[in-house]
Structures are given as structure tokens and as C-alpha cells.
Length: 220
Image 1 (tube, rainbow, N blue to C red):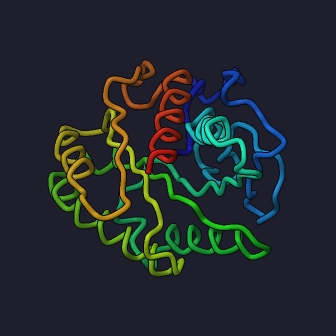
Image 2 (cartoon, helix red, strand yellow):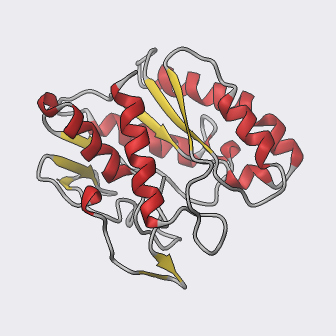
């Protein structure tokens, strides 16, 4: 979710597709918990140890607004940190705690959390044990986040991997596609174009994924 579109050799090319460009009614919660107009890269002050570029978030928000013009202001709450295993997001870990605290801060002055977008798992494809544990870890994460946000039917839209760092990509993908919990949807990224690193999506593919996520949100 942090977005690596347009990042090559430690630099971002600053190209943003039209469908990912700013909109005054789409806001972003900063690392300092302040709202401002959202713009790529959404995760620049969140995923601070990586170079961030275009991700699917902006295109998702614009896609949702285009399909439901009455929606009003959309707030994005970036929380992603690249290169992490799902175990690092388990309840009680620093990443989980930060995600929950940011989500709660986002609705402190009003508003509703409508969905959580989850695109993660490439690091879980390296070790067979991690890949085999993915489904149970993800199902527990979904239950924990819903409990801790007091939102038992929160929509979760996860992405089935397009790639991975190891040889157990299919194991993780099967886990992602096999989750059948209520109000959990899965968008498949397989087939979207990858960058030359054969791991991250291209800028155009990030935008396409954002549109697919928006479609999943609208028809849920």
C-alpha cells in the first residue's frame, strides 16, 4: 500500500497519472495527525525508511468519489510500512498500535471508518512457515482490528499478491483468496505490470489497482 510506482534507484520520478492527482475533497492524515489535501506520495512521512512513490490509495479515493458523488469528503489514513511480514502487524506490535491509534485519531472530530485496504505479504513468501501461517494471521488481524475499532462489520479489502520475495507466492495468494470471513473482499493483482525489480507494481498498475479497489468498495 505504501506505493513504489515511479521509484527507481532511490528517486521518485514525480509522474502522477490524472486519476491519482489531488482533489480538494480528498484529505490525508499526516504522521503528525493533521489533515491536509491528499497528494502522492501518500506514505512519504509514514514509510520513512523507504522511497515512496505512487500507490493505489489516491486512485481508490478518486474512483470511489466518481462512482458516488454524494460521498462528500474522503479521508485517507496511510499506515503502510513496506518490507514487513504480517506477524509484524499482530495485535500489540508497534505497527499495529500505530495503525489503531491513527485510525482512532482520524474519527476523533467526526466521520466514520468505512474500510481498511490491505496490500501486504511479499515478505511472507520467503519462508514456508510464514506462508503457511498467513491465513490464520490475517484472519486474526481482521478480528482484532474490528474489535479494537469497535466496528465488527468493518469492510476489509485485501489484495492478492502479484509477486513476492520468495518461492511461496502461491501459498500466500491461496491464503488471501481463501479467506471467507463476512465483509472481507479480495482484489487480485496478478497480471498487473511489474517494475524491472519484478516485485513492485508500475505507476500505471498502481492506478489500475486503485480503480479495482474502488469497484470492490462500491459493490460491497
